[in-house]
Amino acid sequence: MHRTTGRSAIFAGLAIASVALLTACGTTSAGGGGGEEATELGDYEGSVSILAWPGYVEDGSNDPTVDWVSAFEDETGCQVTSKTYGTSDEAFTLMKTGDYDVVAASGDASLRLVASGEVAPVNTDLLKNYDGIFDFLKMKSWNSVDGVSYGIPHGYGANLLMYNTDVFTTPPTSWDVVFDKSSEYAGKVTAYDSPIYIADAAVYLMAHNPELGIENPYALDETQLAAAVDLLKAQRANVGEYWSDYLKEIQAFETGDSVVGTTWQVIQNSVTTGNTDVVLPEEGTTGWSDTWMISSQAKSPNCAYAWLDYIASPEANAQATAYFGEAPSSQAACDFRDDCESYHAGDADYASKIWYWSTPIADCLDGRTDVECTDYSAWTTAWSEIKG
Image (cartoon, rainbow, N blue to C red; front, side):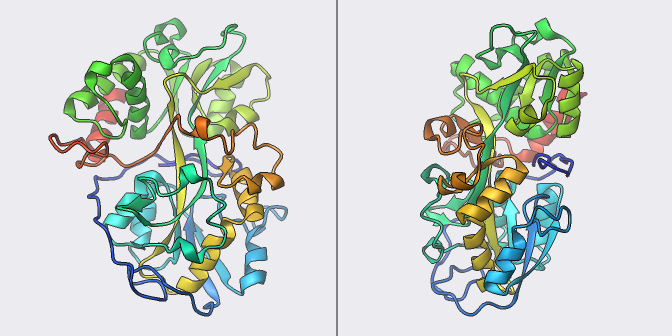
């Protein structure tokens, strides 16, 4: 599950199976690795291997002007090797090899990595930059289990409603323009091409069909999933294009082929025609917050901790999140960016309206125990049915 970077990589869709939630893990040993939380750090090992989304670990080789890795290497002596991946499923498979010390995981992968024992608890007391991270990103369901932290937040973003201002002379305030009222814009509605988009329909149903009892858009029982599928099937007749490549969405809005649909702030920032705007609708929305995690098999746990601390530092975090096109993880990072306002960085009220991507699992994420929820494999099947 992920989006295109603000510069290069093309998003690839999700294809993951369901996961089982892991119970609390031990936190007693020192040194990191082995699936246990470090109690102290030792000497740097001289290298660190990082697995991440494109645009998260830039060393100047792609663009000489974009480099936050070299400063880390100079500061710590930990030489970075990195590999990028296109889907969370790919990342999960690669992490099982034990070849990587650190991974940047999205919410659809993080719990699976914990449940499979591929990542270790993270002792945030050993990270001097952790305190500065926004509180609304810490110790959440996608980066912790039973009060145990499994990583640190990288940045975050919301899935927004973008609209053509020539068509919508009055700004829309609801997702109804892409759901119940989508027929008014038949053929020019665009939607995100991924099973996780089912959660967007669930957010809408939470507000407009309270009798369904949806409390969390990633915790849907069979009846609730069926309602979301029905809504998306009705929408399907009016969708001109499902998008996953952000460049294609930019082009569609610039040509007028799309006039309304889900988007990211970085996409709206990139549209050149000057006749688009975005809104976070009254129902709320979905979004993402990625997590830097340490492998339970890490060969360089000390350099891994050094990377987590460094990438959370204000200047490095500002560089990385700005390049990618998302809000940083701390207010201090905004001192090194001039666009934090457009990303609503640090706005806790704004952030509270975002349901961050999480993996649907059979054990309902909303806490229900009297029913089994649908897992991601069911969502994947449903998405194929929706698109036909």
